[in-house]
Amino acid sequence: METRVWRQPDGKPVSCLEKIKVLNQNIQEIEGLCADALEDGVLMGCDAEQIKAALHELIESLAVPHASGK
Image (tube, rainbow, N blue to C red):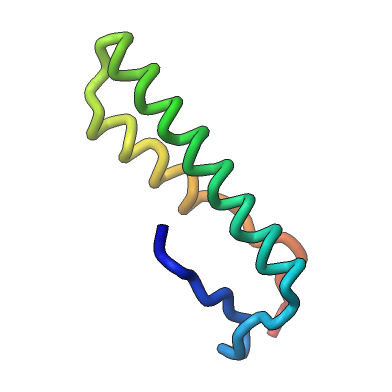
């Protein structure tokens, strides 16, 4: 897995190691869930590209919590 630099809205890197650890763990968990969903769908005879597209749509539709009104 690539080393990701987590950034604040102003572009500065997140420096808190605990925050970085939590963010990386969250991504690993999401990756596992997505892989499981893709595998399940393919095993049930669904088109892999359609499942991937649905996962992309899901991510794109997420609302940003606590977004500032800047």
